[in-house]
Amino acid sequence: LPSVPAPPQMRGSRSKALPDRAVVNCQYSMATFSTGERRRRPHGDRQAGELALHLKQTFEAAILTSLFPRSQIDIYVQVLQADGGNYCACVNAATLAVMDAGIPMRDYVCASTAGLAEDTPLADLSSPEEAAGGPRLVLALLPASGQIALLQLSARLHQERLEAALEAAGEACRALHAVMDRVVRERLREVTALMGD
Amino acid sequence: QVWQIRLDLHLLNHDGNIIDAASIAGIVALCHFRRPDVSVQGEEVTVFTPEERDPVPLSIHHMPICVSFAFFQQGTYLLVDPSEREERVMDGLLVIAMNKHREICTIQSSGGIMLVKDQVLRCSKITAVKVAEITELIQKALENDKKVRKEGGKFGFAESIPNQKITAFKMESAAVDTNNVEEQAEEIITKADPPSEVFAKPILHTPGTAQIGEGIETSWGDLEESEREEAAEEEGESEATAFEVQKMETEDTSTTREAKKGNCKTDRWFVCLDEPIVLSDSEEEEVIILEPQELPMKTR
Image (cartoon, rainbow over the protein chains, first blue to last red):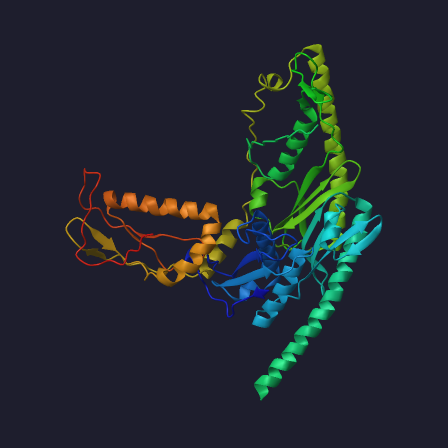
């Protein structure tokens, strides 16, 4: 559940403003009912801070920040249901929100996890698959140019298999891109139809 | 048997790429460490002291070593093992941790740099080569140390003291090519906007206090509620701001500073200071000067 207030306004201390581009500020929180056991602390988790930082880096690279000097773009994401791949869901949702807010980006940012289960690459791991302890690769991709915005790997993975896992994640991202594109265009059609009336 | 092992890393000399250095130091420390021997008989557990039985090494499955890559100019240039100056100007960083069996233990790309898949694969190949070298070095050093300990020679710190290796590691600062820098700096300066002129107009409130400039209107009332909840969860920050506020309040009296909380709408609170000119040297600690007018000073 992301929200991107638009148009971007500068909030907070002026001294943080960069003179030539926008600052991207991300906050990540999980609803208490999102995981199997009820979480007690939705904010202020170390994991939340780390995920927010990764989100910020990803979007700083993807949004055309040079078009909004001295301003700040806030992205607030809240996870309602966590079933593996929290970061990826956040990135995908935030991409749609940023698109919806009309902030220009280089390309859609699609993210997906990939893993390996005995030589078979898996895409988009669910939380039991993640908990199984196999290698897990998180990839945030800009599908058109094939550029990687963020790449993270946890647990051991043989170098030879890296490429296979990357491929699997890449394919999942591209499939996601097709879906996101379609959704954005439909929404655009709806909105223009409504406004046209 | 379950042991809890704690690894503390202290950074003595930061000349860039602390992740790599820390990973090497960590894994070598763990390999070198010996823990006390334990024997369990039924319900009885005996922990032997190092005098009774030789301490036992930890069972290390593999040695992951990190290698960092710094990217410049949107990925055109790639530097392995960046130094501190290079780190400061890099676009992004890629860290790959591998062990000598060529298994990648972790990859982290950070800094908002856009990578292409080939770059990542190439980096992983470079990493494999570097890790093999480093692992060999580590093995040699560990064996050396074991041998020296057995023979009773000097080892550990004692070995490096005469050479003053740890405390006085001097490296000539690498000369940085500054031929083009002047021209580029000129360009940047002419293009940048000149800083706006600030006119200082001291306002005299009472004899003894003066005020230069005015803080922005505080808009704290409406925001305080929602932000306080958020901030309350982030313990570190709220402690810091509480400390700041207290500091302001105590310093307030001795130097007659007016703290006005400006237009702060982020979760990190700032205190905007207007430093008045102290016209009188006050010997007393507690000097409370009553302002003739009501100043909008909000305190927590």
